[in-house]
Amino acid sequence: MKLQGFNIIILILSGVSVAYIAYPLVTIVTFVEPSKLLDSLARPAVGDAFILSLISATISTLLVALFGIPLAYLLARHNNFPGKFLLRLIVIIPLVLPPLASGALLLGVFGPYSPLVQVVRGVEFTQSPLGVIVAQTYVASPFMILASQAAFESVDESYEKIARVLGKNRAETFLKISLPLAKTGIIIGFIMSWVRAVGELGATMMMAYNPHTISIQIFEDNAIGGIRQAIPGIMLVILLAIIALIAFYITRQKGLDIVKLGWGNG
Image (cartoon, rainbow, N blue to C red; front, side, top):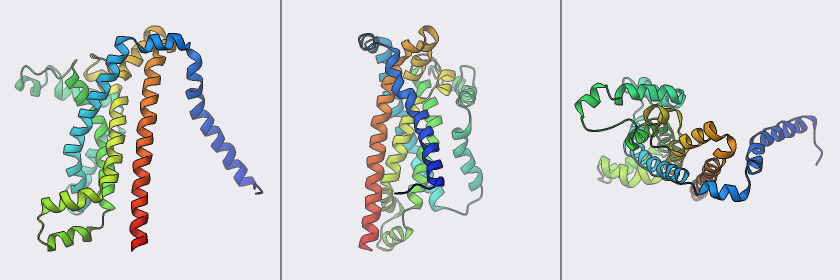
């Protein structure tokens, strides 16, 4: 196949992009000896931070799903209600705000001297796992809501209308028709939200520097001992990201296969 000038330019620019992204990942293994890497991975601080990130991110994502999926359905199915633009803006704000700014806003609500904490006495929101969950939930929420909204919008409303004609109420229609048909997009949103929650740093540092999540542990290790000391945490996060991306692409491919099957049967 003869390459034209345009194709050559595209290949060169694409190659530069791939090299720029892949090179740091490839060279990371040169920063630390394998024997020292195993010793570093065995440090309790790294293991505890990694486990805390997994648990807190899972709880945060479940909370986002519980409250975010109904909001996504509202945005997808009700197009003409007052304030919809403002509601969309509110949903997107955590996505575009710098994480440190998000953390500062959360401190205004959940800080030790905020009105909420004065009412709910005895609950420690900052410097606690609860603060980690609050921060992760806030920054991860747009990923679940926007992905779920797109998933519901891709579902043909005629299926819901037929279910209503056949006597199903709105709750049954949502649970048995809308939710299953949109499940692929919702699962993708769940994965994206979970990965975002695991990797959260800025807002979590503002809300709860302690206990350490894996991102804060990487930040502290790098500040104290340099990149070599931070490598174990980085490698754990990379491994986790690869697993999450594999799950993402498998889910996405299944969704595409379902769509193709539907078109073929049609």
